[in-house]
Length: 112
Image 1 (cartoon, rainbow, N blue to C red):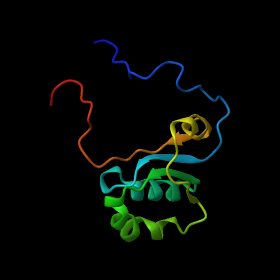
Image 2 (cartoon, rainbow, N blue to C red):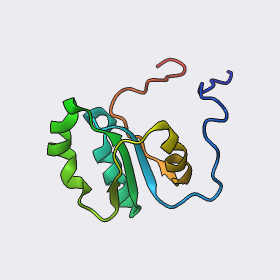
Image 3 (cartoon, rainbow, N blue to C red):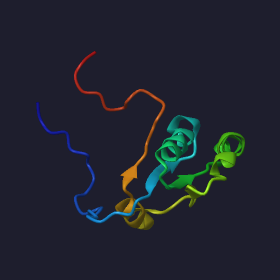
């Protein structure tokens, strides 16, 4: 066994020892990223969820049909796409990052 390093520069993000209470979703607005599941998890926990996500033109129909109506909840805030310079504050203040992907885990250790 050994360490598998994440590959991010060590100074890219700073730890925040007093985070806010909101949950966060950061990613692309697509079916396999499962923002709908993140919303369900946050609502079940009674926690605020901030969603920073890009809506690609090819995913606009999915967003309009499957996600847009889920944003009409006081616990859910859609902030839209954010840039690299905004990610430190967004991620640094969150209590937890929700990333309930719907595809096989891309990093697998060992064998099945």
